[in-house]
Image (cartoon, rainbow, N blue to C red; front, top):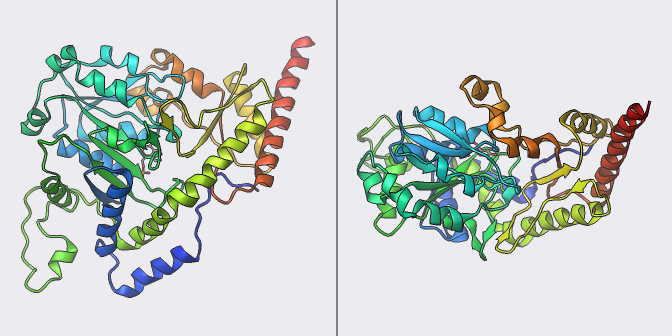
Length: 411
Ligand SMILES: Cc1ncc(COP(=O)(O)O)c(C=O)c1O
């Protein structure tokens, strides 16, 4: 069986985790703080806080910006549910936008969704290919859009415009105009979930790159408090002599990362640019190379003019098939012991969002992308032989399903 995305757990990671376990310090501590500094340096932003999930990162950023009932947050219809769920948790309304042909939010369709209630846009770098950040940044600074912006608190007045909070769950390491793409938003959230290309088993980080009127050290202190019950001291500060007394200044969340998780992340980050990324991009390109001879294979881009993906997912689309044929092809691939996936079922087709009034007919491009999409395995240890086996399984499945249909049509 070729799995979809197993983690790469080697001795280096095991030893670093053991080191944490033996150190006597297993919750948030020195390794988490080091991991935060290393992420900031790697993606070239101003400050990073590590958390126990990417979802926590989106929720924390929205809570910090004071998002709540009555507010609207623009999210893509084509994403994992965490992006929109986080908005629902605040009491605000997710306003969905259709996808463009690259799976990412179609920036040209955002403006007509903006109202005086719009406070945040959450673009998602689907599969690790960055969104159109220049266009997004130009849009939120457009005179007519600025005029609509109605701040609901001091922070929103201080920013003076819609915030761009990138859901960069897939895209640590991705580049936009030659720089890491996280630096092109006000805040970006990474996920280090087990299937992510840089993992800590579960985990995430929120990194900020706000304009200069914001003091990022102060921001970090606020977020640390907010992510730990609103307590003015974290565990590390409390164990210091005389450190028992703390205050609670707000009913904060419980989102902190542990040093055990950070120890995995430190090893992952150390080998990421020079090893992980090279290997993932190589596999991605091998798929593209092998599939280019099939006219039914709509292969994804690893790079465009100003974007360079990190090959987080390989989102293949099959030309000319319907949803049911895609599903049959997936079954046929499974029958050959290869695990594939679909990224994503657009949110409006999922029960909760359907029930809440979202209608897939309003997101035609998202459905068009979804109905013939199949995600092929991509992970560090996938060999060239594996890639050949997967492509052969796909070709067999396509021929079986599509040929069968042709025969049935002829009869
Ligand atoms: C696009 C997207 N956003 C957010 C998340 C949430 O990340 P986490 O699972 O770390 O909470 C994920 C995770 O799968 C994701 O794919």
